[in-house]
Image (cartoon, rainbow, N blue to C red):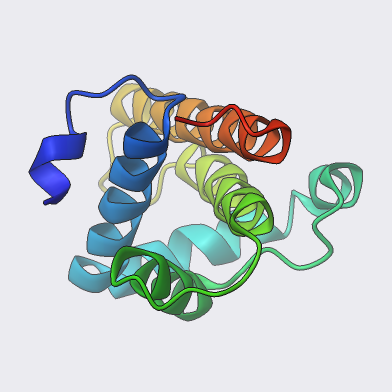
Length: 136
């Protein structure tokens, strides 16, 4: 099912679901790296989180649970809020990615950080569209 969403524009419901699926898979496949990046980014993102209205972006395990509920159809919360929380997580991870660790190539890390930030922006836009009833 997820492969059907892969080619959809980012700011559509299938595009948002695809991005949530990718985040879910990343957390499942590389939990240590995701945790490390989240920890690095978290120390520099308090202001972004407060401005965005997300007091606590989900940690990697909470993001995995959230995306799992959405992707398996058992989610019964506000999808707009869930998309905002996933966006906040991506912003924190993007900041963590921008700080290369030992053995990492700085230029590649910056590109990965930019892609993660783009995902965060897309998920935030999808949350706004959902609230307006325009996320299709």
